Amino acid sequence: MSNFFNLTVVIAIMPILFLYTFFFDSVSAQINLQKCPDYSKTTDASIKSETLGKCAKLVFEKEGREKAFKNFNDPKGGFVEGEVYIWTLDTNGICLQHAVNHKLEGMVTNRVKDSKGKPFIAEILNLSQKQDAGRVEYSWTHPTSKKVADKITFFIKAKDDKGDVILLNGHYK
Image (cartoon, rainbow, N blue to C red):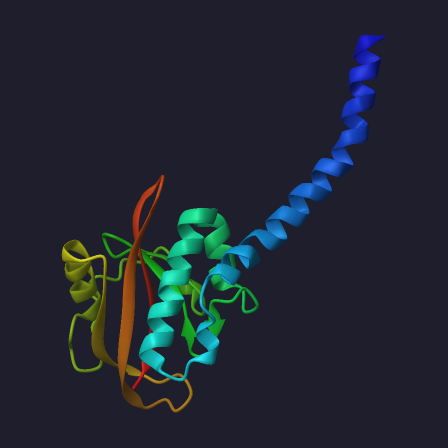
């Protein structure tokens, strides 16, 4: 009788647990984003970039890698706005996540150079060993105009149980 009772209780509770888990997973990142300043309302690209990076760090460290990457890649997740988006490197330059070009994920990027030959990823990696956040300027092809333009990328380090990562986003001057 007790096995039958236990099975009945488990079957009765499972839908409740499923709904709770579904609801919690779908709103948890939104709750964290509400604690961030609304970066979309500022017109200063530099402030917007830094605010977006700090919010990404908050979500990454609170929600964990998998949920954060899912939110960073989701156009409605709060981290993709036009040509501004989050991408993530490990400390060796391996691309862990890229919101607009998933083909880069898993690639070693530390030797990537800009259109003028500047190894800007190596510069980001070197700076991130000395400081927790910063900016790097380089030249990159603008996705809309297809012309080379000056770009500034903001980076900020974050940490989880798998180690340090570098969260990045950039804007064109």
